[in-house]
Length: 163
Ligand code: CUA
Image 1: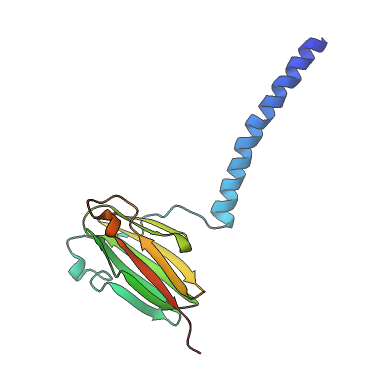
Image 2: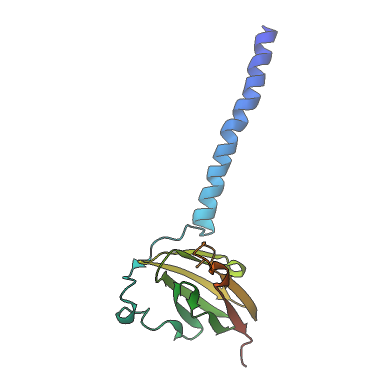
C-alpha cells in the first residue's frame, strides 16, 4: 500500500509540471500576442518588382511626412543597398516602414526599435515605430544576400525637435 502510494506521488510530481509548463507557456504566448501586441509580421500587400517605376509608393522611395509627426519610409532593398539608406526624422515621430525587395530576399533589422522584417520580392512588409529620443540607429540587412551582404546598412537619425 505505502509503496504503491509513493510511486503514485512520485509520478504525480513529474506529471504536474509536464502539464503546468506547457500551459504556462501557452498563457504567456496569448498574453504577449494579444496584450502586448507582439505578432509575426504578415504580408501587407503585393507588388510587382519589375514595375516599381509605376507602382506607388515605391515609384518614389524616400521619407515622406504624411501627417504632422507621422512619417512613411518607402523603402526598396536590392543588391546591395537600401533606398533610402538614411532616414531623418524629428524626435517624437511615428515612423512607418513600408519596404520590399527588388531582387532577392533581404532583411531589415533595426534592433533599437525592435524591427525585424523579411523583404521578399513581390511582397510588401510594414512596421510602425515611434522614435522619442534623439540619436542614431543602425539598420542592417540580416538575410544573407550575396557577396556584399555585409555592406547593406543604413541609419535612422532622430533629430532634436525644434522648439
Ligand atoms: Cu541584403 Cu543581406
